[in-house]
Length: 156
Image 1 (cartoon, one colour):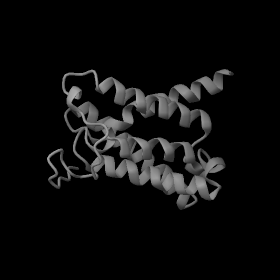
Image 2: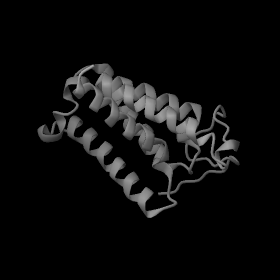
Image 3: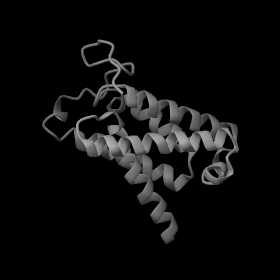
C-alpha cells in the first residue's frame, strides 16, 4: 500500500472517530470541532450540488454517479440529524451508525470511506467501555431527535 493510500485511510479514520460525537455540546472544544465538521460537510455538499469548482474537485470523481450523489445527500442529512439529536443517541445507535457507514462508502473514495468506517465503529466500541457508555443500548431503534426516554428533543 502506498503512502498516499495510508494517509487517506488515516484521515478518514480521524474524521470517522469524531463523527459520532457531532451531537456533543459538553465542551467548547467539542463544539468548535463539531461546528467545523458540520460546516465542512455542508460546504462539500453545496460545492458539489451548486457546482462550485474550487471545493467540488475533492469529491467530483466519486459523486459523478447516481449512487455517489445519493450517498453524499444521505451522508449530509445523517450528519444534520446527528447534530440535532441528544448526545449518545442517534449517532451511537445501529441505525445512525449503519447509515453513516453506508453513505460514506457510497459518497467518498474507497480509502477515505474505509478509514471513516474504521474510525466510526472504533468510536462506538470505545464508548462501550466508558462508565457512561456501559448503559448504551446500541441496538435500540430510535428516531433522531428523541431522548432515551422517548421525548422529542432538539438541541442546536
